Image (cartoon, rainbow over all chains, first blue to last red; front, side):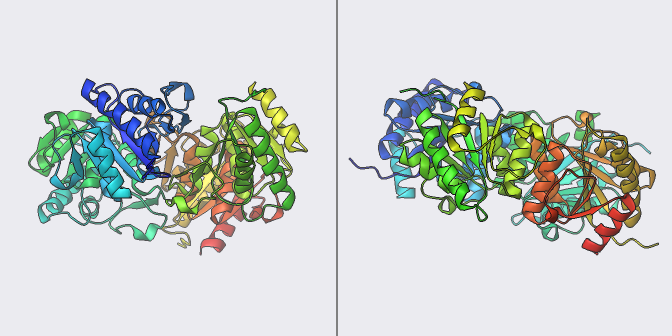
Amino acid sequence: MSTPLLGRYVAVVGPADTARPSDLTHATEAGRLLAGTGAVVLTGGHHGVMRAAAAGVESAGGVSIGLLPGLDRDEGAPEHTYLLPTGLGELRNGLLVRAADAVLAVGCSWGTLSEIALARRTGVPLVLIDPWDLPDDVGVVVASAEAAVEALAGLLG
Amino acid sequence: MSTPLLGRYVAVVGPADTARPSDLTHATEAGRLLAGTGAVVLTGGHHGVMRAAAAGVESAGGVSIGLLPGLDRDEGAPEHTYLLPTGLGELRNGLLVRAADAVLAVGCSWGTLSEIALARRTGVPLVLIDPWDLPDDVGVVVASAEAAVEALAGLLG
Amino acid sequence: MSTPLLGRYVAVVGPADTARPSDLTHATEAGRLLAGTGAVVLTGGHHGVMRAAAAGVESAGGVSIGLLPGLDRDEGAPEHTYLLPTGLGELRNGLLVRAADAVLAVGCSWGTLSEIALARRTGVPLVLIDPWDLPDDVGVVVASAEAAVEALAGLLG
Amino acid sequence: MSTPLLGRYVAVVGPADTARPSDLTHATEAGRLLAGTGAVVLTGGHHGVMRAAAAGVESAGGVSIGLLPGLDRDEGAPEHTYLLPTGLGELRNGLLVRAADAVLAVGCSWGTLSEIALARRTGVPLVLIDPWDLPDDVGVVVASAEAAVEALAGLLG
């Protein structure tokens, strides 16, 4: 079995409340495929895209770590393998980008945009599915979870 | 003298290295006008738009506080009245948004975009001059420093 | 097999450079025993007590997560199962205390004392082996790793 | 007039709820004297020693900046010249130590001890009035506000 991202950490970020059905589908599929590559998946620990990604990871027997904004582990989506409360509020978005070797953004929201912008600002490789209109140099924009994971493997391999 | 923003804190954010001449002009003028309203101006403490805003504040005898990403006060632009090293790196962008009652973004960059996105995410009132193309609900987009300060006074007054 | 701390997170904190041989022995044994209870062990990711605890966890097939102060995953001790760079410098001490359900301090140093003090300040249950002289209400002081894990199970069970 | 600490930042830290009358007296006197030296005084923004220090600064026409743990500026003691919400909870203790050129601890509590320990850990010069029993190398222990400010001037001058 090929595990090109073994030991690498990929943050999957995206909307919570405003995630569209297609975002959730992409996130679950990306989580499943990332787990298959050996990557550790990081998320913001909440619902929407975060929960969907964790569910995908779980279905493939992989590992996800959710970095929660609040102080209570119970606020996290239970599909995560591990959940860490940070108490940093929205500053945990920056922590998530820092802790990752690459970021995959699925869909967009203002919180997601802050993560995209911080990834670009700090030079963390970035792949995006269905982002908002952003400058052309935002990163690698792809149309499917499969293409996203392939792009991530290329960037980190 | 009218000081509609007396005791209010306004963060002026914008590019450092990639600030255009017009961004610097807007920032200096906004700093000058904000000082006249009695506002305390917060910035990220560095050069470009941050320094220009602090220079405007200084020219009007106002107060600016720069929240630096690093650990060394000497990295800050000396036009600031006070400079506080945070050692948080780019997480200080989020701290800046939190400490402010409103945010004025002048121009844009990936770092600035992270501040715009966090302001929107956390509900901090936002006024923008010359932003990138962003969703229509991003905030109040104006064309001059004078219009920006008027808008801020309206939002916070 | 009894796993009284299954799903609970215990931070093992202690000196890096100034760890004594007995601190390392206690930390490794505590890591081994905590893994046996089902607990996830958190550390600051570095050497000394942190590395020794991670090594104990590893020997028992458990899971440890190291929260590093810097930006580089490679600065972490490789005995950890997972390593997350935070870039927070010594503020990651506070993050470690927050993310944990209980703290076990093995030995002492100024950095360790900051973690002990933050645990007390924020009400996180605290067990200590060989601490400095501190007020009597500092927490449960014990003499062995076995007694420490028993005390932690009592506090969290 | 001699202002040996002009442009230097001194954090005055100490208990909130558990401050003794003598702590408050020392803090107010230290704030008054520090303002006279030209120093900017930083505090945690709350009541007790923090508020007493700010009141002393105010009585001498100096400047204090309070870094609040929460998100609400109104939680701060109004004697401060400026108040900045950080939303970091007790992690703001570390921010306070970082932003300061030196720390003066008046009295002690678990929160104060975390600041003392972080100052020692990160090499920030430290002067203490009435601390708990701590290792001899904790810093310069003095008996009065006057001696504290003299010691600070010696350390930073």
